[in-house]
Length: 318
Image 1 (cartoon, one colour):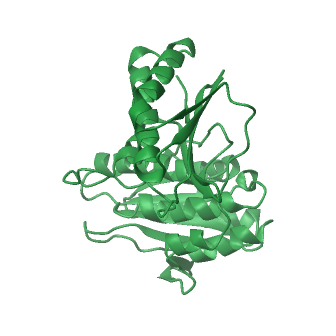
Image 2: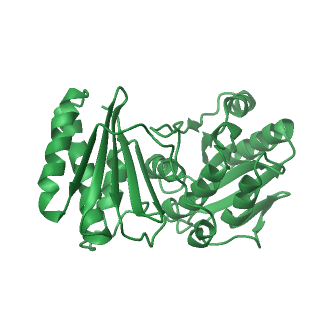
């Protein structure tokens, strides 16, 4: 299999899907795509299950590749959070590879992350289209043609602008923009946690109280002074957004856990942008960077909405 992807430096994300017929076909396609990328002199990154990664490693021999970080979080996974993590890793990979090095990323569907309805993958691919849009990366996602959840298959068809067919890419007529894809599905709500340790209602004049609560909790949970400052900044950005753009009053919930601090901010406003904070704001923009900053400082940041308003969950580890 040969997928041509050497393009000018102005190349932006090319996001393609390759449907396979089962485990053996998935491994075959992954190995062929990896060999083709390495043969073109491109850098290779993998976000695939262990069995697929092992097969690629064996096929490439001494050729090196980057294994992308396995996502984790307080709610077992979030497509938004994974996309933000991928953007950080791939931006560093692109910048570290020189101006002439292409980057090919192979990602494979993992049924262990399907969740109740398979919505993780729909959200992830939509978020990747936003977060990686300005990067010169070829991202090929390997999906089963007959997954456990129909949501997975429909999401894969809608989120990928390109299809892998034969020895190249072709346009996908089923592709739709991320906002349209997410508007047509139920909001992605994280797993419900137990009762919070702290519940506090606040307005814009009481943001100092929010910062003080987080600053007091952080050292007791093992956060060093620098990480504590990061955590206070992240929570403050989200809490400020809630009362400036959501509703005059908001509510913050805090959970002190062995794995760090979990925070939720709830307001009664409407969320117009389903994937906020995935793209760095332009340096000249005076506003609109709060959620993006918080995403850079937290292990997980997930935004969702429902009939009661807009909600943000953050999870940070020491």
